[in-house]
Image (cartoon, rainbow over all chains, first blue to last red):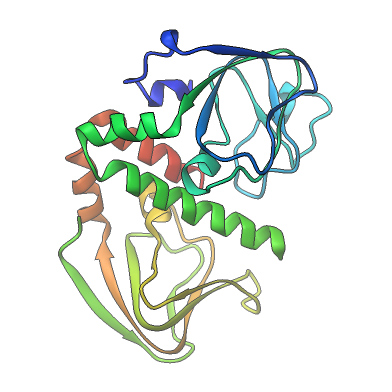
Length: 139
Length: 107
């Protein structure tokens, strides 16, 4: 569960959103102000995967190798949220999904209370990876 | 974060590291440029210029370099040993260092 990576967030107190199948959870171009945790269901980011990215095509029969499939417990487009101002790829509900949204600045503030280096370092690593993926994609 | 570092100077075309070597260090370009090449060594997949830092995800992932990097022109870099980064991570709360390592593994 990727949500375990953020143990200081009490997910119980954040509002849930139910997204019907084939609807967008994230639309490319949306500002990365919110981080989404997939609480239940399966979501798909079409054509978002590149070499080296771990994903689980078996979860969804129609998913191709270029899609990223998210199972319950996943943080959606985490790298893009950390590295970019706007999401680069759509994330669609493959089946009915329950998602929890949390404000990016809230996470940052919680992190900074404990150590001020962790957040910028995470963003910098995510930016390096995202930039590299974009370069490979363009090539 | 990282204080102990060493300056290195490369000639034009000299390799900084080769694909498959373990990533024990990360770098900052002081002057010149570093080109990260494709598998055939023909196309520059990525270029790093003065002031740019690179190699942190690979060092954190404790894996090998995926590609070879060479200097374009005479290039001066600062080399940072991974141990300093790991020490900084060790000083963080565990959940934060775990999170950073998780991010790095996505590289």
